[in-house]
Length: 76
Image 1: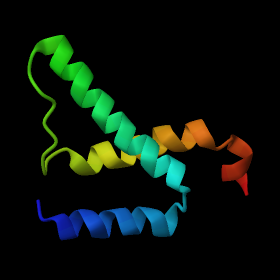
Image 2: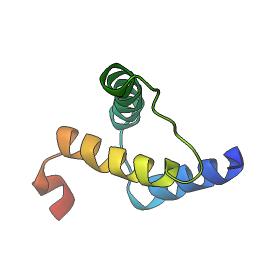
Image 3: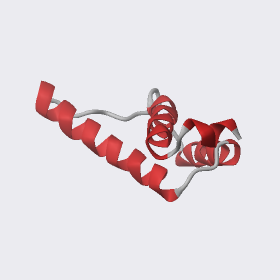
Image 4: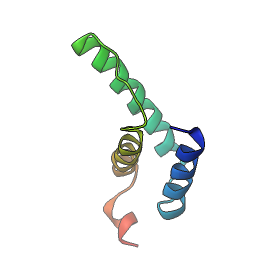
């Protein structure tokens, strides 16, 4: 996957779902933890590739946003 496509995807997410830097930082932490835990659990590394990166990014943004924002934030 070309990094430019991922950059465009992240910019599109930011355009339609503005978020703080904390959400992006939490997303990076989630990826790091997933990688470490999968390596410890099954003995092989967690591979992020062009087939799953977009799903992982949007899922991570949703989970991190729910941690930092309340439902009243989304209701506005």
